Image 1 (cartoon, rainbow, N blue to C red):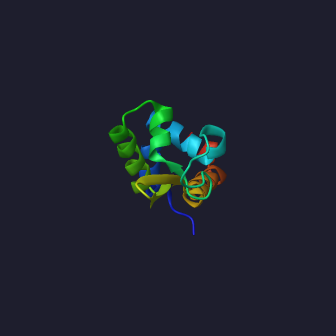
Image 2: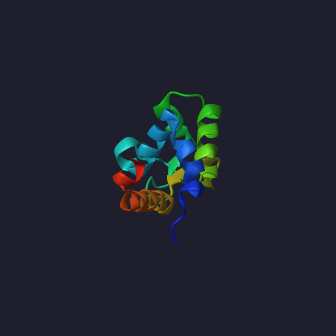
Image 3: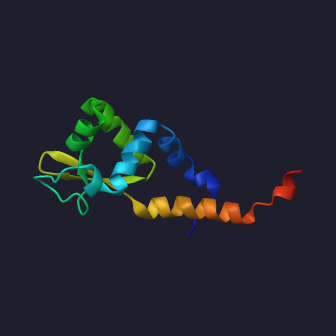
Length: 114
């Protein structure tokens, strides 16, 4: 079932931050943006918060805050493996956002706003 536009506002707010948007872009194709990990598969398990921290050059608490915002918005999932938290893009949530905009574009009528 598709979500109405107001329900995706938290996701849009989360992605409005350029750092979070960049991290999401990387998580959508982790093998192109991160080196192999000792623990956890990049695609299956997600990317270790340490790898995200290294790539962004931000502090670990800042990255953790960004990741919690993305997770609260439903854009990523997390799992703990050993002592690390791994984050993975939630493609279902992203597909729902795309569907909402696709439906909105399909019902848009430029003459309705004249």
